[in-house]
Length: 218
Image (cartoon, rainbow, N blue to C red; front, side, top):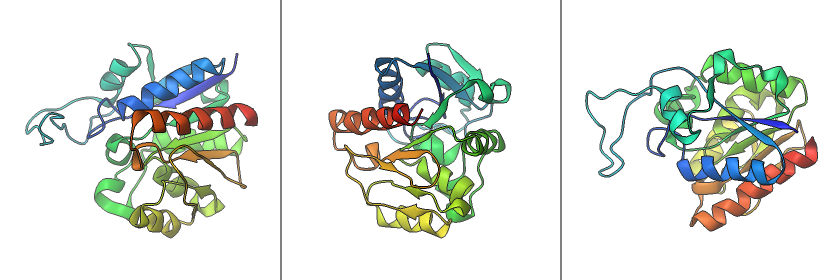
């Protein structure tokens, strides 16, 4: 059985992983006959957001690994302890946690830095030709880590984010929510998901296709 790593960034779209995207990814992997291996960096979240009000919860702190365990039903491995060699592919769901915790694009734009453990995992898979999947806003991480390789990525059609992706050296391709972009350089697949929406059903179509594309590349 193929093993697909899924890097989570917390729990909740405003400060962590987009829960629906993450669960749809895990479901698609299972339906494809592969095993999902949940991973997350053992770091503090940038901040905590009250998802009912949308306001920052002043003074509250949470841990990305502990929060990711909520989605993974406790079965999640700290990225520093993960055996990337044992994985056949790697996928990053979106949510603001990808842009706040896995990197700091939400605050620094193209001057952002990617968490070193995340960057190392992506680079290791790329160098070994293992498929990589990027969902929603997470292609910005791919652009930062692999932009020098001129990889093709999509976040849908948001102009500002597309410009940022190209400023980092990658090539942006407009894409519908139900579709994917498979890069001609490296085994990289991306889909817009909730960068476009508008519904969980439409997002599911794109994520299902992304996992299907990854399975075809294995």
